[in-house]
Image (cartoon, rainbow, N blue to C red; front, side, top):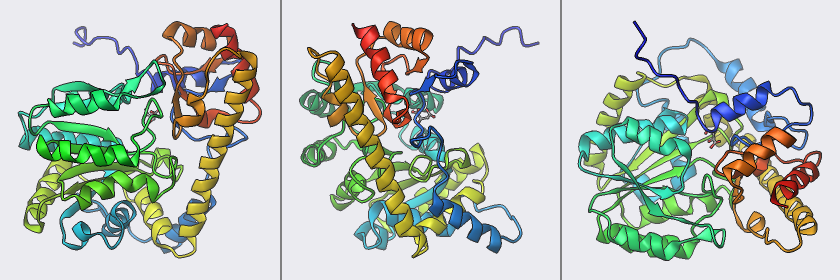
Length: 397
Ligand code: LMR
């Protein structure tokens, strides 16, 4: 019956993380998956989230289905977090927000919506991008192409080439942009570059689809929403998928959202209606619990500042590890430039290590990086950073 079903080759990130779990070596180091680990190598349960959970559980009653679009308190809290409570587009009822199953769920719902209402549009993603972007959008039936992004020679951004490519894009193409902490490279647009992008988006009638999965890990919770607010203030219509997996350490709860900024409130009503139809066709309605934890943290006057301080601490610890890795590697291999560890943002750095070098790191040293050379620097800690540097020096040397 199922002879024609091919073997699944696995996912480059999730399968590697599973392989790490099965590796019996005690000193193995997981720098593969995009998860923040604390200095003890554990996924933290944030005190603000734990306190929110106590409150949510104490208040919990019956468990009805949520509406297709998710819980109203969660959706409003997300809008205020992303756009600001006083944002003109939010106040005018032009922003539609639905609660999604992780931000991946938001990408999928958005992709299905785009396929239906912009069937001729091509999806343009950065070269490179998160491995799953192409899979999700192709799974929606969209054609996915790339625009230039990462400069392997400098470890920075090919901004001019990116702009030129977008200036030549078909009108109404969808442009997937990482709002902060680019995955996998850690290379972000500056504020000035975002501003330079706006006239190109307008001129070519391009539809931005922002992916904001790492809010707070770049420059700050507010600062990392810069692109979202800029595009809204510029009167653009666009999509933004966001996640609380990393910012609240709620990976398995699958808490995300998809927002669509529309030209007017009447169009927003119809967009919301069709989003609901898309959700119903996909998974009917989102789960209750995680979204209520998020809503509580975001709106509780005691918990909100606690959470903001926790995000600062996670971001600062990553910075410390970036500095430490840079310093140890620079000392071990004085001829080489590792400054990209200091300039790249967020959880990831693109190391330039080849797939074969990553294989050696895994096999000989138990150090797991994605074969693209992406390192999750949030997996470094004071106990493993020296060993990581020694292993990298060995494969580079
Ligand atoms: C990652 O990029 O490692 C994370 O976003 C986890 C995932 O689902 O790929």
